[in-house]
Image (cartoon, rainbow, N blue to C red; front, side):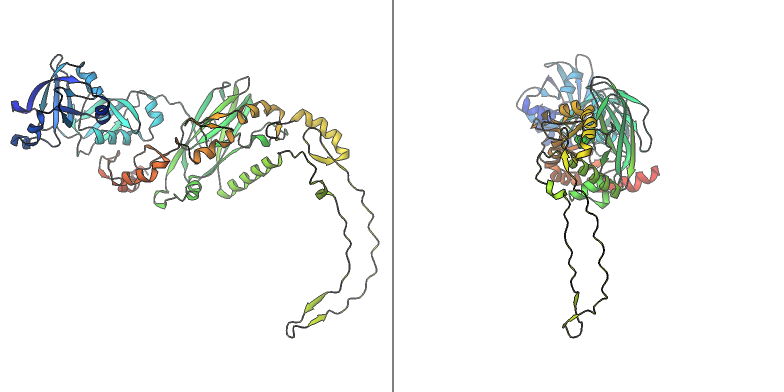
Length: 526
């Protein structure tokens, strides 16, 4: 409803913001007005009849297109300064518009939003919740059919307003509105996989990635991931945080213990994933109040070699004890495949004979604490001496340097040279079939997403868990990705901020939101 007072309507020209102004009003519906509005907004008695904070209708005189906007501030310029998305709707700079302060709009009760970039669904964890709250934080009104811009941390996305209730233009502040997301432009780049349900045979070209999303994993479950490759070769990368794990961005991988291959077979070692509970407990961040949830885990499979790889993926849950035992076995076997080129420990394997002398046995008497001699046992006839064993002569394999009995060395070397190579860089035994892959993936310098050069791919998980500037966590309250260095500050801010529940529109503190979702909406689903 427009104002009846001509003092609340003025004609201005449009202008885009400068750099400083754009940081304030980009991804919002707020505008900067000429200073002549200042007295009207804050001192004019008639201003009390209008909604607070101020709400304006801007109409382009050239084409009669309208937008509803909020107020940011006033400036000495004679133009009305608007966000880029408003300029796209109303026209170009210097276009004449009519700015009218309005009394009210109907409160929004529901909306349908259509993200226009498929990348939105790759970056945002909880679309309904994030879209609804991005609107409530930055927008005071929306209109059906308009394309607006919403910010999520450092990222911005274009969103089409598909529908509004009860009117085409609605007021957002202090409303309880349900939000629906139309995934019209969503292009799912992941193949979905469930626990204990093997995939059909898949393939990936050499140098390309195939991405999978493991659905609904309990946060107390440890996992065992097996990739059975029938043709070609693969490298597998796994992450809970990054939706597209790859060679320079992963937390677990099939190549972490790949150098442990002894050439006895071509089967890959399983990838063992600890539960979220184990990880959070090790970082002293486990919260029993937030312990009952499921999550998705992301798998990236890289084609390696000269031909396309054909493979099947199987995932199973394993108990924590089994995870720890299997991981220990992998690590011990990996260490055992490191070649020692010296004979400094040879003498430890030689058999040594020791003469045993028969001594009288003595004990202390309990009561008197005097040393007494036990009763002499009847003497037994001496046993005939055992036949002496021939001394075993050991020799090292010229290929893998394993220490073997001399008579077995010749046969072993024939087999060993066909199956095993020693990496000249790290001195590990590597299966002949995996040697090119080992050289390409393990010993090629890696550039992390943060720009840091890392000497070996084995160091990527340690780097990500430590000081990587790009390391992020998903906030359980607002669902945005947050740099770990800002985690505590962000969580404190989220606990005090006001959010809208995507399920019912109810507004509440972030500290109460998770409990509300668990007690109200989770029970309804069950």
